[in-house]
Image (cartoon, rainbow, N blue to C red; front, side):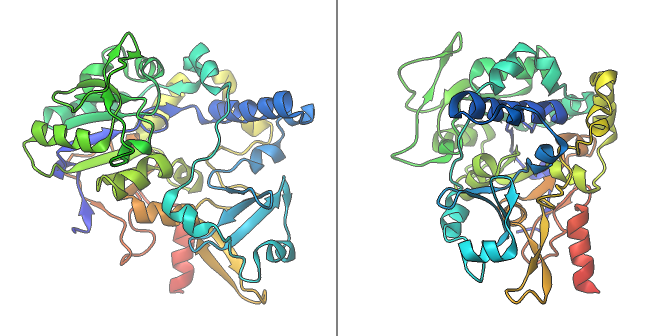
Length: 406
């Protein structure tokens, strides 16, 4: 396998929707996610109403990449080998001796191997989607003109463009109308909604048939196969693969898929579909990776002036920034059982990115102005852990590599 990756070498270019093509106003959306969960806990589980008041401390506590240990009732942050780097019980930090009491002197979470090979699903909560539907402009950031031009250029170059989302057709249409304009369907050859990823990549007998849609309602009878491009619901990877072979004239079409979820996008697409995968990692922007000029300009145009600085004025960190309580999304310190030596370990999330992704970017805007034949260095176990990030690695990974070489 080449150590470089190029879009020009791909026959098919696919995209997830949420947090991939659709970039949210992170501050507004993060607040909505917090409110959705806390309202559920207060109204249905009798939690204290004080939980509804968002403070800098509770905002800092919200962190992507944690695992819920249901047996002990803890939240844990894992290293690449399953070591518990940090843990809380509720919102209270567990001291080193308390972590050892729960997880032994080696601080090993016993279910790590199962988690690391299946990416088990977490629970969902309500209020989020109705709120976005009521006021999409508040939460959804329109794609920049450079991204729209990029999509058209790929289609003009003969690439098959594919959109796969677990969102239902009506929600997909709402989002795409907002971010891409009313003519967005012309950009894609195949649109698949309600894909129910990662199950979309399942094989017989679990795979679901594709279904056609009439006024956003699925036809009751599934299709035995796909014979032409169009808009479909549910479906499975093997049937899609057959259609892509026909459309590209290639018995083994080369597919790259852009997504933001390890569980729904990267892991199944690379493991079962054998696709190239590009992960959208917004946390890169919280660790020194500059935003593209197009993204900066676009957000400046669409974000109301009265909201700018609002979070910072209240002491709230940027949603993609490292947490005071949990540290970096990519790297964290780990002390030996004796407590004498401290080493920097990759987090489980960071290791998974390197293992299941071809490369990582903060947003599609960051590469939209590049030529299709641009050669990106890909992740490789034989390369430094900083290789594979574009336009550059996050600060914590750079510091880790610098400390190892010094």
